Length: 419
Image 1 (tube, rainbow, N blue to C red):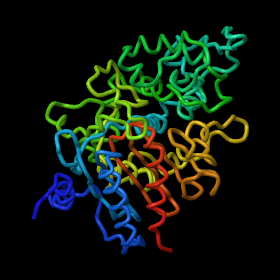
Image 2 (image 1 turned 90 degrees about the vertical axis):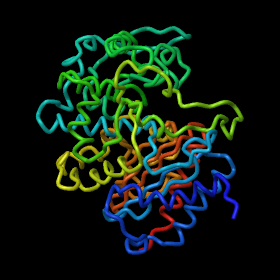
Image 3 (image 1 turned 180 degrees about the vertical axis):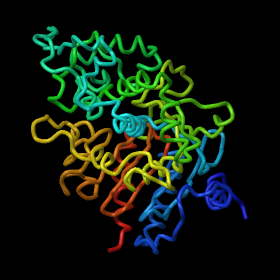
């Protein structure tokens, strides 16, 4: 029998299940109310996308009722080198870093060291006299803020510290394009000085707008603890949950496990890359810079679903997780979540995660109270407490196609649930 590289990758998918221990107790899909026929549809989806050269490969994990019912690797870790995907492949999380950084901040909150209502200038005085950029005829007039940016504003994206790459207004043009752009251009002090001296896009506490809030939150944690965010999250979350492959930096020994994207964006036909690869990062950017595996991240998600604990390790209290995963926008803050993330119409926002407020509206299926966030390089994560479901997809797929995958993967998962 002649084996192609793709066939070898699929065969290796089965073989690696004997090499790598599962991140959670395993069970058959059928035993947890998931249709085995839908697992075949999921396999077909990934195999077809890889064969069409739309994605290089992926690792997919689904937990139901605390049991791991799907844990598979597909395709290639590095298509150019014909290296098959493995379950222990490492991916840049991009904005899925934010969820872990928010959880880390809440550990300080539980210790009475981080009030949600506290102004950021309590830790960084340079944020004391912030302004909002009022634009008329293309000119910016800085106007003093009415209310200071609070820790809650950082966590729920109501701070006005916008991503420059998310718009074309004169104010947008003053900000770095993204978390990675900032972390590869500035050290932490330079970054804070840049933000503090730049007019905000919105008055704090009035509008949901995606930006640098979680990056600043990470630096607040560093200020409180007197150590790097990597060490903080490792001590408080990662090491306690056995997330051994989650970090802000890659050692030489694990770099061969880093998943590589396709050279060409399958939609635009243009060259594509993952911006953080190969660049020096000057601070642990909580908004985008961490790396992890599907196995590590599903343990993190299961901890949240369990109310803050996993395998006897208590990371957060149940009421704190409930606070984190409740809507913090209400009816008075302008909600732009569905504009920034089209699949999130009908969602509000909690502390680091989007939270579904209504069933319907969103093109993605789910239930009131499910919570989620994704990564710009092709990673997907959500928790559905009603279904006792945690889903993680890891792929090095940074193009616009990633937005299509968010909806298609969602449909495949919910289509397999039996009631």
